[in-house]
Length: 103
Image 1 (cartoon, rainbow, N blue to C red):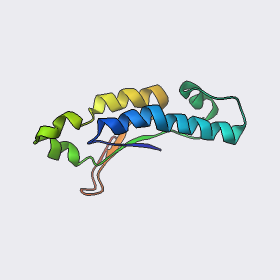
Image 2 (image 1 turned 90 degrees about the vertical axis):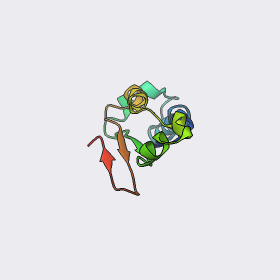
Image 3 (image 1 turned 60 degrees about the vertical axis):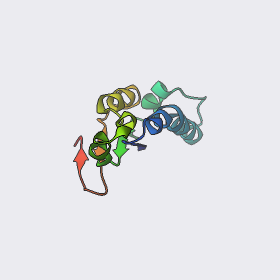
């Protein structure tokens, strides 16, 4: 599971650039193969799904009413990042409101 915060574009960038790389290193350690690229993760992890989850979904609505709306991660942008690394849809959830999007 790769998580990002809906209220922080930086967290999606970290998910794309940092956490996918960490997953690649972990997979490398587990299967003992040469360094893998992000697209190769899917080949070697057919039994290990990668799921992108946006947290703090409730903040999408709260921030859209303030001046901080430029920090909100566009759902389509998250889908694009996830599409490059996963065959599963993006999920967004809120612990506060218990809402889930994408199921």
